[in-house]
Length: 99
Image (cartoon, rainbow, N blue to C red; front, side, top):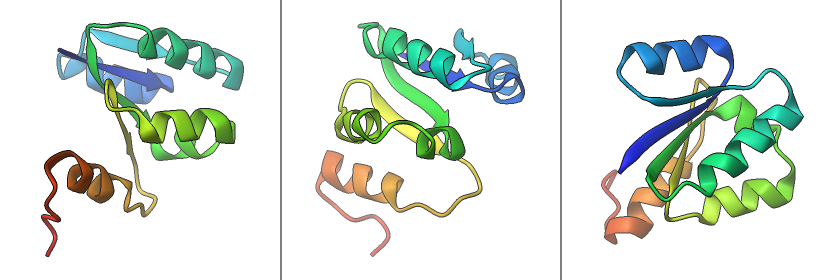
């Protein structure tokens, strides 16, 4: 299983420097959606990393698909508050680690 990241140049560069091989830079919303669809179709990708702001700006239908996706698991990271990660862990292992 591999980790993939899709997003702005800075985010992609950081993950590339950390050793992530599947890093895709997107400069527009259409390009972002296209790259996400490419990654979602890749059977080798187990985790897809997006910035929280990019995730929030996606069309609601795609956001829903990404939220429910198990393989790859989609993780939105950033400074915005979100309980998404907590809920994904709870669903995956059946235990709320924050309690």
